[in-house]
Amino acid sequence: MSYRPRKWKTGCLTDVGNVRRTNEDCLYVNEEAGLFLVADGMGGHKAGEVASALAVKLVSSLIEERLESDVDRALLVRAAIRKANGVIFNKSAGNTAWSEMGTTLVLALMADHQMVIAPVGDSRAYSITSKRITQLTEDHTFVADWVRKGLLTKVQARNHHQRHGLTEAVGVTEDVGIEVFVRSRQDDECLLLCSDGLTDMMDDEEILEIVASAKDPQAACDNLVQAANSHGGDDNISVVLVCPRHS
Image (tube, rainbow, N blue to C red; front, side, top):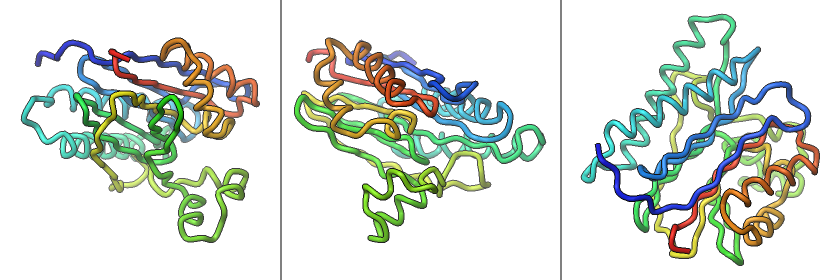
């Protein structure tokens, strides 16, 4: 298919952090298609790395193959994630080295003033303007569920020993719960996709301050990763920042 002229200014960066030996995160940027992904893999030796790379490759290729002007984008995103889930699950079942591998995934498919967002796991999407940051996605974790039920406060959740326990992930089970939503985008709004290696190290206001003060999206991504590492860098860190080109 042919894509429209680029409408986005983007930045992206993935980093191993200060503690991990390998980077099991994977990201993807296609400005022409308006397609952006971040995945954070998990599993045994190199299995997380395999799962995140597979998820990004499978989801992006399926969407780009079928992305036409009249397609239902939300249904397309859902189908792509479901397909990736099945492939990763089957590969895991057929290879003991990849047993129980899986990955989080957060995806944005953008067009004009509309975006399709799909999160699985605890990688997040944020809306950011010069003065406000808003978390668009809900974490699929036990701790997040407990917060929603009033059993924990958000402050307690940040340091809870089970904060990384996922209730949904791509490839871990034969079926996966897929939350897809469509929202409008404001003219001055940027979209941040990130793995939990960023949000575990920094609070939302710190993220807003760095993005709002950066000269461009790539500088913002560079500064976010640097800040997360300066705060400890306990995990791999991946960020994608998408802003309207005219701003």
